[in-house]
Length: 236
Image (cartoon, rainbow, N blue to C red; front, side):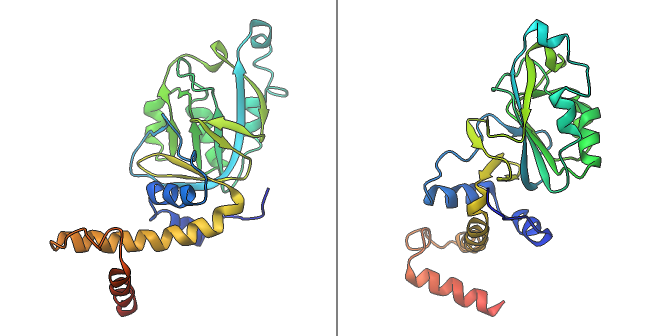
């Protein structure tokens, strides 16, 4: 576990960097499975950036279900009281979408605790209410069925899989209207800095394309184009 901690400045920077650009930066570093599959925003237009706090479910079993409402031992309820500021709750639901992993009451609770978003490769309940919260939430589906019909919570803040991506506690989790990317904590600083530069370059390239400029030599940029971009930056 590294010691990178997200700042308000980095969160603002990340709100203007696409998950596509961040994913490209990670792939350059050999991290090919970093963008979650089958996980979509409940309300496109919101962005999210924070450190992973994980919750892991296993398949439900009847003798385990009988103990589900003991809030003093139920790992799901304990996780709701453990996740905190600058963290994203990442729920490993084994990509099972037949039942919800949590609903709006728990979402309100963790937001009040400072949690900055929720990600699960399973479903959530109360999705109309969740959508109205304007809280960054990414999910695999919607289901009215309560979690205990298919899931049993067994651990929190441990390595998990979500959306076919490995997630370690404290990894940097970034979401936009396209989806969610997982940035290993030790790489976060360099990835943010490189991706911010790349995003600025690509925005400039888009404006060049709009003027009718052809792609050859522009994208990817050759040395002449890079020099033109640097000159433009210096003039701003």
